[in-house]
Length: 235
Image (tube, rainbow, N blue to C red; front, side, top):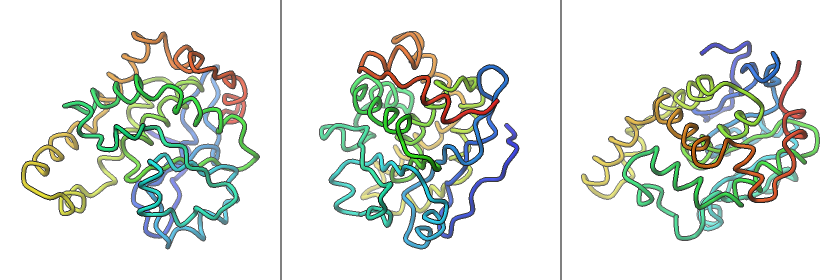
């Protein structure tokens, strides 16, 4: 996958990128600076992100996570916490045995919450939109994929962007925080599934089960498809 623009360079961020340049419906492209994704930004990145004058910063983590480890951007007027998980799904790895299974469960259980994130993007004030969770892999990956699919980005490009996370993140840092070898083995196996095929399976499930991203979101009352496409794409 190639894009016309480089990703942002924010101090301390390793999994941040601008989704601008990806091909969209009708020969258009995702506008540079329209939609960005990252891990939880460290304090060292807050000034650089604020300098972009973001219109919306969506923290996709659970409220309890935000209380335990607050975002350094939580006081920014553009910041919102909209979790895509319910309280009972606080541990992603307990939702299914594979990443594709976890993402299917996120879609099935979180339709209203995911719809709320997309509605916030569609209605956001002018300025870049930044999506992040903790590592910028799973929750951010699924929400970014749905936003891009709504904008008409082909599945193969969405999947290639998703897989970039495997190159950006350090698995060793994550493993060091886990309590035992069984947890580390499971995490290694799931991390190996951060591939284009995993996201392609997720998008195929979205099509087969729900009729695609637009039909999926309209089940929860989402009406901002045209607004979201206009916000994210350029001719």
